[in-house]
Image (cartoon, rainbow, N blue to C red; front, side, top):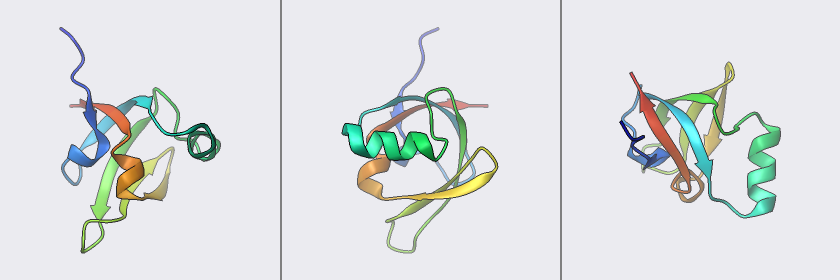
Length: 80
């Protein structure tokens, strides 16, 4: 069965996923990688801000806040 890729922003609050691809410019991608957001990392969507931007994810045991524009460029596959 093929992987179902979707942007991080399409996850429901509380859902878990695995990062498959980060389609950000090199400088932004490098910054996220330094914070532990790597291809293959398991993440959980914690919450959205009241107006939908930014959003908060849990990765490698800590919470990370991302702009919605950045999160749309992070492709994930949902995990059960």
